[in-house]
Amino acid sequence: MTSVRRYLISVLIAVLVLTSFLAALQSYRLSADRAAELFDQDLELVAAAILNQYQMQAPQSGQGLAIQLVQQGKVTYASEQAPRERLKAPEGFSEQNFSGKRWRVYLQHSENNSQVMVAQPLQQRLQLADEVITASIYPVVLSLPFQALLIWLVVSRALRPLHEFSTQLTSRKANELTPVTLTQVPAELKPVLSSTNSLFERLSGAFAREKRFASDVAHELRTPLSVLEITLFNALTHWKQQGMSDKDENMVALQKGVERMRHLIEQIMLLNRTHPDNFQAKTKLLDWAALCRDVVADWYSQLEQKLQQISIEGEEHLEVKADEFALRLLVSNLLGNAIKYTPMHGQIMLTLIHTQDAAVLEVADSGPGIAPEEYQQVFNRFYRVGGDRHHSGAPGSGLGLAIVKDIVMLHNGKISLGKSDFDSGLKVRVELPL
Image (tube, rainbow, N blue to C red; front, top):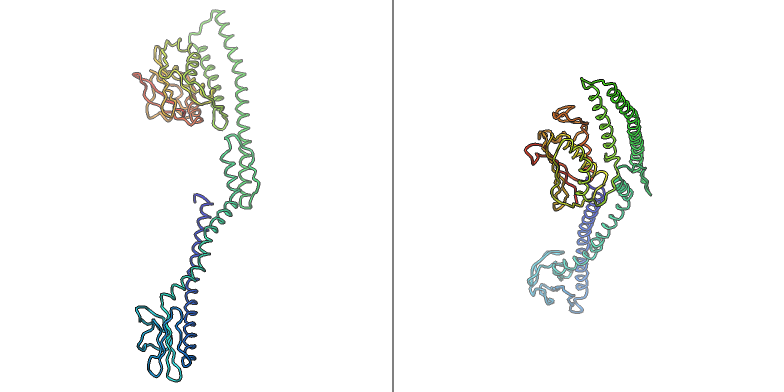
């Protein structure tokens, strides 16, 4: 059932039309029988009047009637449409043909061997009956559209609370979990409204606890991590002053571990912030090309360390309506991944394209790339190609592309992976609607 309103209106109108049609049909039959009885009674009255008065004066033919008077076996009077020869018909009512028409005939005998015949054309009887019946049915048929309109208004009014309930639900934002209030709540809708508000209340509490937990965890982790970084820095400084060596590079591994932990905490916080349930986009017109140049400038020191070549091709200015924080994070994550997995002296290219209905950013690198069968899996949280460490040896948390996908979905865009334009590597294509 696609629509309760459409279903109710359609069924009620169908029942109304069917019952009205049956009532009109029955009315037609009863009216036709009654009209025939009345016409026959007229014929009887005319015949009786003629028999009573034929000796005094010649009968006069009524409008449309055929009259024949027989006395002593001879036709003594015949109206204009009556046959001149004695009509042989049974006594009482019958249907006969004469004068080129079909007639309803009434024949009556008197005690003195006289006979009178009164006939009426069947066509005239049927026409008069149809006029009477049509006049009685016409108001019923004419009222059908008004009845249908009345049904539509009544059903629409009855379903107004349901429509208001649906409108409030569909117009809500992802993080709006306040109770639903209706001006009028019918008895059938009260359990649904109560269950929905109860669900919103539980969801609101769960989201509040989740946000508070994520914030508390990040705060509690950052503090000891900062202490660990400071302690590690002081230890390394002390070792150098004492001339101690780190042949097994344990301190270097410890530094990388602390750096990876900090990166993981930051990515988890960003993932929580950009999740559709928590993210509140503040979209505005942005120059995507200028934003890409700013992000490249932020990463320039890492590019220099690995002696990588980077270029920005395509549109010099590309306007797109998006959230600035989210779009900057998207470009930064894509560029950071490209720098991380592209080897020394590698190449990275950002291409900005303007299509008919979308703004497109392509980030291609000359790194090892990803197998096509893993294109969809890399968007899953904490998934990393090759296990905990990529075959390039680059550290990571497996959240970068998950964050990018969330941002793309928030902007109703598309993201896809493919082979790089270089000899090897990966190309990420992001399309955002204009």
